[in-house]
Image (cartoon, rainbow, N blue to C red; front, side, top):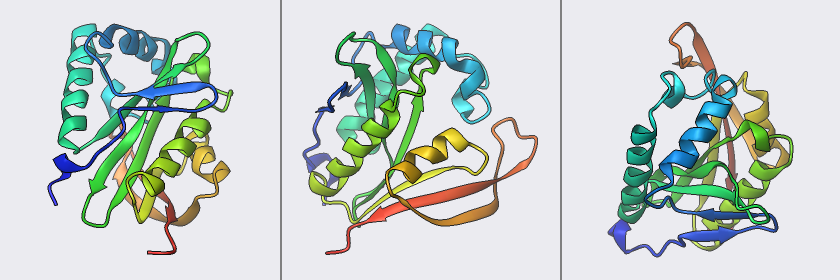
Length: 189
């Protein structure tokens, strides 16, 4: 099967959020969010080790849009319905269309933490992966020390399938880290 032929929704909604693919011009708003949140994101995410410029963030958003249409990475931006404010990013990564299986990745603006937004977004993505994309497996991986990130799959009933010890280096390269692997699987495959 050619993944480009898979129909994928460009917009999803929850009670409080709109999830949509990146559009040209989103870079400035995403970059402002990164700048606000850099201290919270830097321990966990490689792309913020050096603060990106607005132009770099815009290029990244446009590349994400292209990858969405190629079905190699399905990134959604999160916006509050009420205010229209950008609050974060989530999406499907490491997609295996042959199974099909996806990994969900995410990050949140520091101004939006503690409100349940990411749990809400990941919940709708998980449901869409199973019902809309007919996935057999949805996975979330995160560093074992990232308690906030781990709270998302744990709160949504994902199973901790294992902890891969010394599996990666910290984003700053200073130490080895353990990776938690959470998953939900379709049982009626």
